[in-house]
Length: 485
Image (cartoon, rainbow, N blue to C red):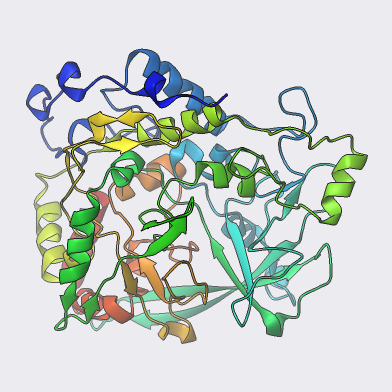
């Protein structure tokens, strides 16, 4: 059922009366997202509603939460369809555990593999064995075009009786380095290959494969409510030749309109891609993406033989907007331990290293807040001072380190393979508590903060070298500051 905008417009934030003056900030904390800040740090810290979520909108939040987390099946809504026939995860929560980042399956499999398995021709199978992958496998030809039989994503999971599009395998190359003071660190590069192609195999010489692990769903509403003019002004003045930095905005065409990109690893989306996620990640059709992701492929026939019917949509517009509402109403964890002398020293070192030139500490949301995909407005997100530690711009992150750097050869909108949106750092210090791991960067190659920093090249090279030339105490302090975010 398509909801009407008039039925979904919330009352004004003035009626709610919730302002920062009404909120007590506990000792040792600092707000990250205005009135949507959460002042506790449990394993559920990414998955709590903001204080202003109440009444019928709390009910919709809970409905969206269930749609986000509950496992989908191939028989949804009493008819054939639902999950699949091919997919990447069986729910949003299978990859975004507690609205965070589920441990990448390729690292899980790698840790459990023997030496002989790791050194085999294709390496270790990286696809998950429990119905989800917790990563997206993007493929293109080396000339940048897509493969007609596969599209942009390899779906390595399938319902019973249907063949997946392929399976991903990984080899991990590592190299040891040392800081000037002698402390050693290691960098790892995953090397991908695809096996068990459902159709014609693609020659490795003609294949570019890049893997993305899930993003944290922290601050999604604030990102959607960002003041676009402020971001474009940042792009206009983001030129620091002494640091080698020059950020730019990404613009993409969605729903027939060219818009400022804000979400995604390369700022390649103007919205939170709820409908795209249900379609591409879970194979669930909806009004925006009414065709199955394997339309025209063998898996459609296999699904029909399993009794699936593709005659109606798997998810309604109302359901899609409730998921959108859930994501945008999530609270943002506050900064913690701000009175710790080491955290304070680390914050100063963060500035001295120029990290703030891209990881911008303070931004603002536009006065009207955000609008959900079917017309609901969230004015409580408006007029807020927020601290995402990102400029949401594209930066060249280099192609040199270990022969590849962070260049994945995948173009998204205006973003080239070596360009990435500055990752928002709010909530990053709770990832280990929420999700049980510290894998960072787009494909999880960095196993800790130190490795993530040392992968910075290109426009991040100067700041990385500042960190590299700090003494161990200073490096530890800067990382302790990151743990406080």
